[in-house]
Picture 1: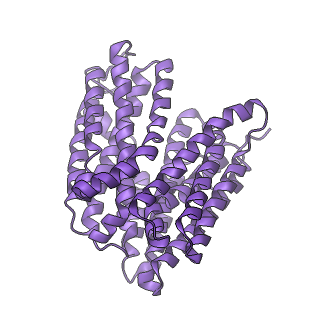
Picture 2 (picture 1 turned 90 degrees about the vertical axis):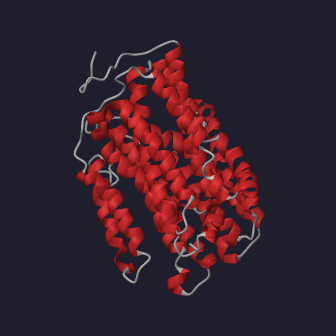
Picture 3 (picture 1 turned 90 degrees about the horizontal axis):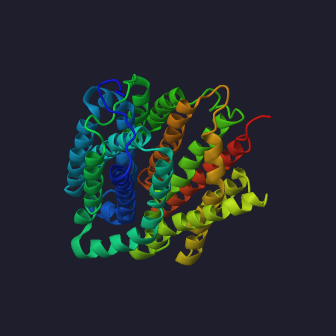
Length: 445
């Protein structure tokens, strides 16, 4: 049958389905590698661009772009169709990466990352829509599993490979390394999807745009004498976030709303901490960039290993609840904070960060399942949008706030190590609140 706008929504099978699945996985791989590459190189980029007091600018550009795209993607798909959207995403991805690679200031780097993040948002919506409309459930489940694995493998390989490539070619060429995988994925998807590709119904974008506008205002104001007003930017972003969440999310209502609140606070605490890992380890613990890369990969590996044990424990009735796992993550992040204040060595901090990842692995599967379980007041479509928004928004706020606090030495005349310690302490507090929300995430009887 035909979708609005003339797009063909028939299910495809055989070789085209495999090609589409491989293309979607390749897109996910390129996104994962790009994330690990930029995170690993953050200390080098910070030093080269003189951005020690502008970390929030460096770490939030791509996510602000992602949210801007999420608010506009359905309208773009509805008006121009899938092929035009895919081509636009391809061009913008390359342009954004190139602009960031040529950046001479923190703000120009952030602008390039914003464009690349916007492209990633368009392509993420396209990829999910293509999978839903054109792949049967059996294949779609395998694609989802493979896409999840794409965030584990780079955690093992990307940090070390990034350090080696940076030594050979410099950080500017290194951040362009994920582009070939992205090109491959987009070409495969373009070839597999039927001619009219994917469409969507246009939606109002005003409230959703409050998220990137509010966070951008927060980041911009923290770098000026008006920094106390930066909180207004976060308040504005919260209005946009609340508009996308089911009723009761901000009040920790039992069931899916509390699970979504838990995912959001988890994103604040964990992804905020993850965005500063390489800075924390090189600045706070005196580790080399290679050692910081090991630390960056330690948490996702521990996350993956812990997640693999949950199904077996669940079958035996021994699986921990999500609140327990998030409490472990909070303890790990808090331990990193304490170690930063005490100016300790690298190994204990590495263990603490790995423990934080293991806690996520224990909590995430159950919490995610509860967040995506509809009830009488929340339907499946609303939950699908909400669950994507919750983690992304949490990570965006966590990265922006943590970067701003870590850069506070410029205002408070303290060391960056102290700023990092304060940032990790605040992120641990967010994870404690996530654990509290998780205790109410089971549906009421």
